[in-house]
Length: 336
Image (cartoon, rainbow, N blue to C red; front, side, top):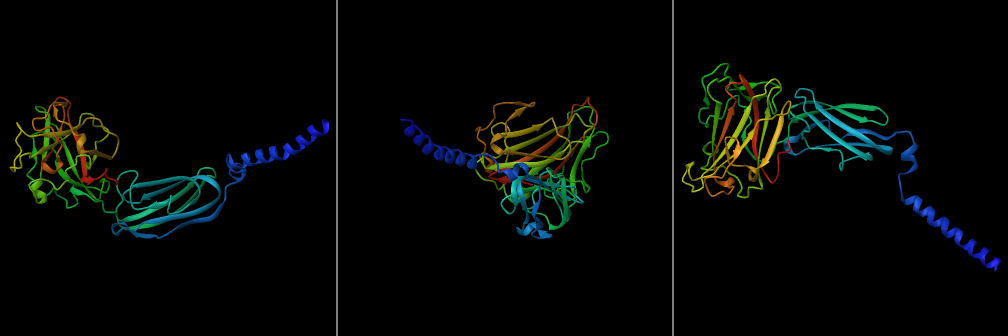
């Protein structure tokens, strides 16, 4: 009986060892990932050092490591100070995880300029730097309403309404710090008798139609714009109104047609991108949601006019905001 037990134990020991060994190999990181010092097995290379994003070109960054590692690739425009950040945790960088098509992580947007490339490996405190040059920035698909790069508002727009007040500055301004390009729209002033400081009228006729050339599905149409309210300004109100011509008679009728709106009273520091689907717009009365006057359907294909109102409490003093790169995109928000 003892011999039988011993034989059984002897036969089971290899099976137990094999089972444990197999489980150990399948679970957890490799020992090299845990204990080996970080090393490059292939130094950083860049697929091209001069790129024209406007033609669909891109840049691929490649490198290989002896172990899985966290890495952060930062590309910074030397003139615009635009920033693109790509991060990963891998043994290699290639077109699957380190491709740059010209987009921006932090505004402003890139322009024609040289850029500094910085690859940082936190585990090894390693920085590897290089440069690339943008011949032309990427082109965003959509219906561009305004980028102000002509140095003036669209000549087909109606003249802005600007109240009589102090330090009024409704104008296109030139500065390399613009969110896109070199120009933006500066709205500012102090009106001590009315909330309204100034108003922009943007008619579909300026783009060749009775209504804007937009899709019918309000979930597919996105409205995007870039805004900067200086840190010292705490009283700005930015209000967009979207007026629909539901009966298609080339006129907006306030008592029987919808006017959707989007209002901002809180702002982040610096340039910020605001993107929202047309279906999220609301009818607002004194800043509060209210029943619309028309058929209550979001119909971007019937949008006839956009109005931009810049406002502030008349008792609150001077206010200011900067506007840039207003564009409708289809199928999703703008990727700048």
